[in-house]
Image 1 (cartoon, rainbow, N blue to C red):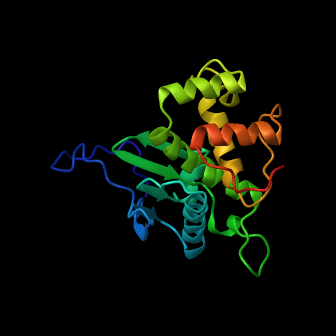
Image 2 (cartoon, rainbow, N blue to C red):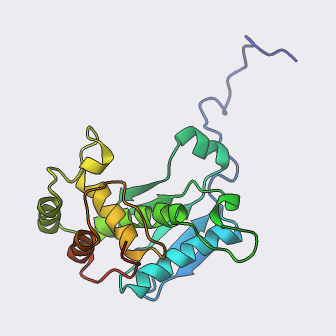
Length: 208
């Protein structure tokens, strides 16, 4: 039926925003060793296992995992928005992971997270952890170490910002696979020094 140009009557529904069905349904909850609660929304069992793996890597390194909500949006929304990300509102920490169920595991047998998948989820959790645990003085030391001018400035290329290099170094220090950095001017020794400065602990990933 053709409805173009049809004038609909006003009523109580006028101006009401209809929510997207199942936009954020909590499917799993994890409790960390520090009794922080991680809510996982819209996740398959494989997607939830990726978050469990991430929490385990952080706890293995001796890092406290912040309470947060991890959201796996519908594929259409990921296509529209384009990327994974972290929301750093101190009262509402969220991680959005745009990796579909079928993209997470390598091969058809045992589930093995590839380097790209590990980088994505650890990088975004890194943003949450760094926001909670790295103060201004430590940010200045990191910028000096890496030869950068600013911690965060959206006008700059992402990896000219301390916040993005720090999140990538966080991921490098926790990954179970060797990760190639998006910035190419850091040796394994320099990455190790950066990870130690940010976290106060040694990396657990293979040095690469």
